[in-house]
Amino acid sequence: MTLAIFDLDNTLIGCDSDHLWGDWLVEKGIVDAEHYKETNDQFYVDYQNGRLDIMAYLRFSLKVLADNDMAQLHFWREQFLAEKLDDMWLPKAAELVEKHRQQGHTLMIITATNDFVTAPLADRLGIEHLIATVAERRKEHYTGDIDGTPSYREGKVTRLQAWLESHDETLDGSYFYSDSHNDLPLLEQVANPVAVDPDATLEREARERGWPVISLR
Image 1 (cartoon, rainbow, N blue to C red):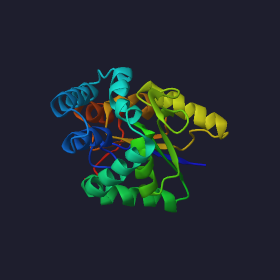
Image 2: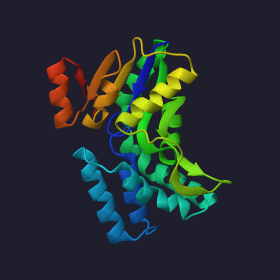
Image 3: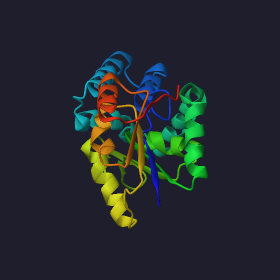
Image 4: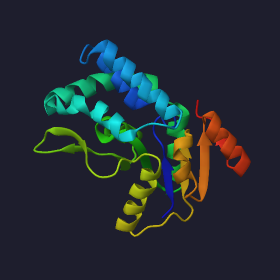
């Protein structure tokens, strides 16, 4: 089996879905506009600069899930996707996924963004295997905590290794596509690392290491 692994945000889609979800919550008046947007934006800057406190961010971003019932959350998510999916969509990314599918590769998304936001996006792309940060649920209600290791930076490697062990698979011949220097720990593990519309740090690293640099924009 050859794994074709894709980061999601700013790789397969043209935005950060978690940040966009936060902006949409502000836009709809679901959360306190000024405080939420300021905090959401600061966390995003921290992520871009490689200094994100992932646990602090998750406590912030998952609170809206804990504060609302499942039916309301699913209604909002459907509304969010209906209004914002076209803004996210990258036809060239869908073509790249299809190219790997036609080659018989096993497709996977691995993302730090939580599974509530990302599961429907993986479905839309027709990608069966999703490793995302898991928002903890108890009796069909979100707790605001996470279940297990967040799939961020080295956590992506940890989560992927657990998946490989459970499926009796390896990274032989594998691909990983990402835009972010935060994904260097996983890019270093695969046979075929590819930088996609990379940030400045990842582009420099990719060119120094001879990795392909492509654009899906």
